View 1 (cartoon, helix red, strand yellow):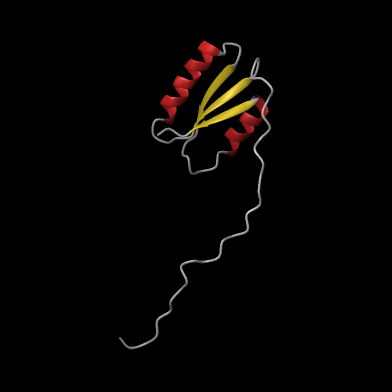
View 2 (tube, helix red, strand yellow):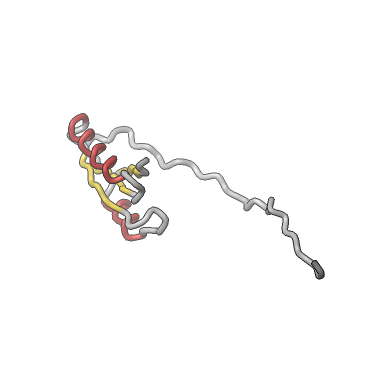
Length: 96
């Protein structure tokens, strides 16, 4: 083999990542609206349906709204805005 080859270091350089805290938790879900978000992975819609039934049985004063993302890998700014303006909490379901 004649000629030069270039070899790259596969380790690379890790980007600087800043820490973020979790969202604050409400003291209670009583009287609140909780969005159950099916993010689009396999069976996450089924899980959200089962979770909604569980909330209806054990926490009947909590309103649940099931919403669906088109794909788990694409941003959904309209959905995020809706959850922020209409909801008190959100649970993301990832399925299997």
